[in-house]
Image 1 (cartoon, rainbow, N blue to C red):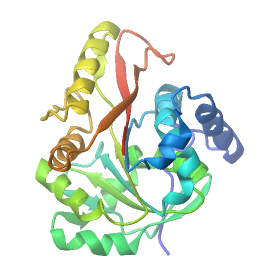
Image 2: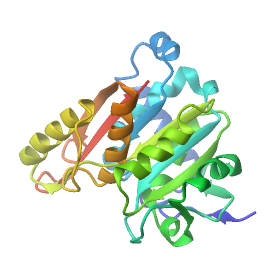
Image 3: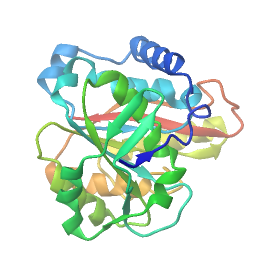
Image 4: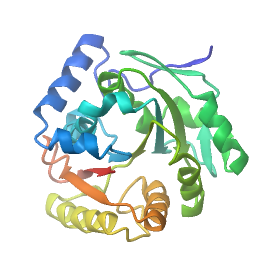
Length: 266
């Protein structure tokens, strides 16, 4: 077994197991957007769009998305996570050679079955360098470990890609049973607070309306979002905004903020 060790524990989220678990449980508990859980369960969440900054800044926004899974956790056995590459430039999508990912909350298996499903598409490669320092996938894992009783993952770091590449991956996996898809993306970066609010509201409106392309100025996971919006248009999917905020709302400097949005797709 080859294990991908955590790269940002102690920086983006707590390193200590108990502290990490308590923080996530508290954020999820306090989320005011859990919604009508009976309705959520009757319309099982199929996908989420969630931010990937440090929990201090985007954790409450991520929690509002993950809280949607609380009463339906048994429905999921496989989680596909798409996150943008922040450190390594490459074309297409990257898998790790690791068969497991580790966080302070334990070990998660990588799904060999789902890898087998997508490899014939020809747009996916094994590239450990893309995963070694990448946080966009890693920060999602403790939320999933806290809320889901058992699951494996398909971790895909997205490099330079066109919307069709992402849409083809989603088309291949969407209808498989017990699947949850997590798309990891922050919104605008390093604008003043008021400008960021205006820009992020426009971006959120475009996401809900399935209007693409989304630019890199609007979202760091723009390539993931564009592929998903293409796919969502083809499938006539409904996208619901749960919360929109930025680092200025969650305790950061308001001179240069990062935007965060949480969305559910049923």
